[in-house]
Image (tube, rainbow, N blue to C red):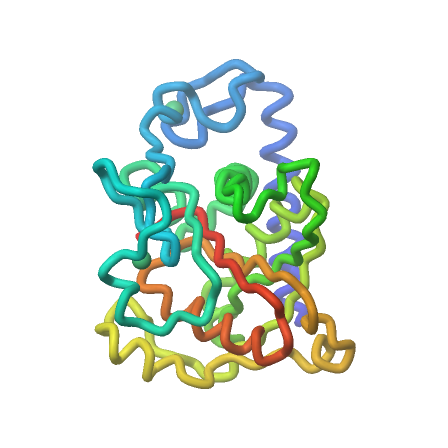
Length: 259
Ligand SMILES: [Zn+2]
Ligand SMILES: [Zn+2]
């Protein structure tokens, strides 16, 4: 406990320091470190131009983008023969080049300050008309639920990237964040497994946390399940199944990038 408190303080100090440096020195691009004007945001124009936003046409289930002239509302061959327990998944950017590098630096190199940028990038996903958070006419209320890490992995990595992204998005859009899921099994890294193994590896790996279950916070809700990257969707599907069993009306997966 002490150790994690010390880490939190350390991280806060680092963030304050970065904030203060921003006041004294010109701001640096989070991508290439070139100095840039205040109004440019987190990335310089050159870096910004390297990002590949995911646009139509895309698979209406898994969000995989396709090139070419396809009718809107199709299901890709990957999704056609699978049972996925979420309504649909929407990623903001393709996992290529800079977007991929930023996510990697955030997740594995401890560049916590990237949460602000990646949270904004994730915000592009919720502009999807099916989610319509940015639509003032929409009266649908969403709650944000991060994909959890197992406690042991959380200790190894020191933070849950999905938590941090959730927090940013909650702040940007005034949404409620609920840490509804708990990972009960320490699963092998999904990246090393094939599709069938992934599903087997994950079965029953998530439960609703006891506090959330007691207060019935998921029943009747519309959930935006948040993670940094969507690859096969197996993890998200398993989480969605747990949320649906707890009474969620809808579970939509949003991620910064699509692997
Ligand atoms: Zn740059
Ligand atoms: Zn698909």
